[in-house]
Length: 436
Image (cartoon, rainbow, N blue to C red):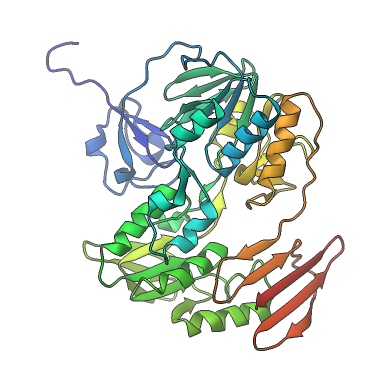
């Protein structure tokens, strides 16, 4: 290198693993090749997931041979992702084969925790240590697998059966994608400083921010399942809680209008301010607080803003492996194998007939089907709509069956304490219970 010559630097997005190469820039976003990272405007957004420049960190490529260098791993089962789905696959495989090599690759530490607890843990006096059942390293040792933590998958070559990562390339005989889904960030909110609770690291940052403030004005964008759970739990910790939702009523995609009205009354009774039929146009970030601007012209001040607008499956891995995709990875309904032989998927990242499978209940059965398919045995998976229990302890809500927008609802119980409504559609029966 000539004297005075500056070498290019790489930066990696902590949210999705995208790598910004100063030599290549980001021409699609107006960042010319050769642009140094520090010269990129502060409002620049990750072209893949929409987070801000502050969510990137310097990245040093890991020099590794083409074949995996993990000790004890010379090809076997590669599991991409270490959430509930990833560890469920490891357990299922180990239950029928104690010796097959398993390599888990995860962008986080791989710690084992129950993600559904995160939306309610905000209102409890708890910490990360109490939420984590086992560290990723201890869990890996228990199951006798190799663990590559803090490692991003760049792509999967389904022809050569290799997984390319930020720490080398690894061969597989079977690959299981358990990569989950990431929070959906509406384009209007790209670049805004927002919190999410889709991962324990996200939860820890949010919890720490709330704990360090004497009075906090919280705004939750999204009045669906997670938004309602967060709202009920935030009221015990925050000065005020406001939920902003595009639809008239909370949880409107899962429960009928009558039940939504009862939920709305409950939120108002616990002093949650619900703004229905409201759309956020943009957020102005400030030093002391942020300003949330609505389509009506109304502005709201917030000390913290939490995004609860649902999840979306990242298509990056699917494109790299040429996997069929429809709101999630398309899988065989019995074996959970994708459109490429030897690659399986489960959990939040898959979809059945275009409907994402975003609940915990089916995961253990999905993992079992995959483990048996890998072993050349049969334990076919049968997909059923899970029972959904909304974690609003003061007003329990249970949803059974697949809700069909076109079918009518019949009220079977309507008391002050309990509302039960049923829906009979062309192919299934649904039931919603709200209250005790």
